[in-house]
Image (cartoon, rainbow, N blue to C red; front, side, top):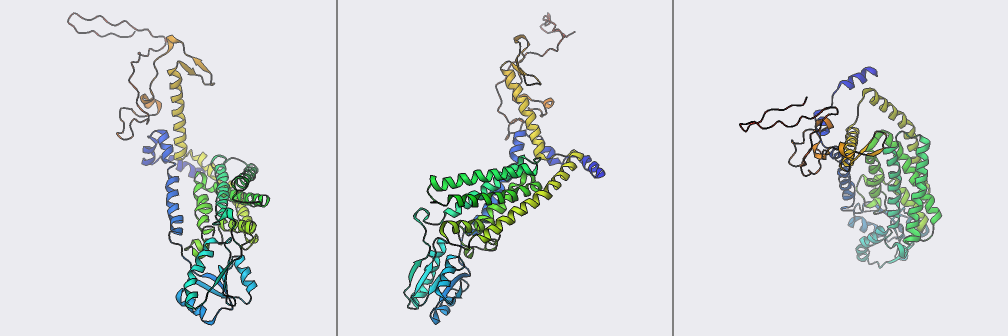
Length: 454
């Protein structure tokens, strides 16, 4: 390992890194964070725009009970690949399948009734009966509709579960993301306590706002608090485990897994029967689907129940703990290698340069007002007879770690990146202990004779 460390230490920075390090430190920091908005807009298009630009039904399960002989053939001919017709022996089992979300709707041929559950999936309850209406009419069937689980007036389109799910996902990953960014040396125990405490706070705030404050949820506070806290902790543990491997780029895997893939695959906006691949398949594994199912079961008593959601919650939490244990060792090995080689990242270099620049700028501001700061942090007044005009922030030279400000870029301006100030007349700095000779008198021929300092 020592030989490898020595060879790595002998490698100098690349030409790009040397050029980038010559920029103003604040500009370096900004540039090193621009990957995040770029990543965000790319993933937004690849996930949200791709998933929602043209949702259409495919293989949507529909229950048939005592259906006329020709109805199935007519539906399969008119809508090939759109519906998956399933025959149920009893109306009660078909109704339960609708309530549990196993089928989109049920049609009872004995009463010509369509059964739907708006609270489980508003879009399905509206679109599938409308899609079948021309076929029913062609078959001479006049249907009536029965909503087994209508939505309440305070959630007319069934979007409350979607936005509660998003708030818990965002809260869970952001708490752990900042732990990963700023708390790398923290012990496992401390990290877990922060995640558990953050889950309590976020769940309490979101459920208080959604319920008593906004009125989008009526009742269920205690159960929703527990569901929210459990999911926030599970997501936080998973992101915390990822952070040991991803470092300051933890936002990338966290947002991909828990936001960009989870939201369109959750079934909260459109069911998986309407989503293209891979979003339809991801409905089986993303946290959004588990959260949404548990919310709908608790709020409106629809959906498959809590079993699948609790299983997913436990799987993400356990996976996070495993990543946390193995990731700590990985992080320490990587840190030892960096210490032995003396290597730093571009972000660390930019932070160090920016810190030095801010210290110099602070001293200039103090000097402008006749003040100075000692190494111990004490602020003192500079005696008037010892004050020298300060150097403006655009006057830093190579001695301060910057290039000659006279070579400035026409677009970026000066090397420091700061606005130039009006020129000042500066007294000549005389070293301590030296004395200044008076200026030599002019010569008779109008010239001047040289003078010196002894």
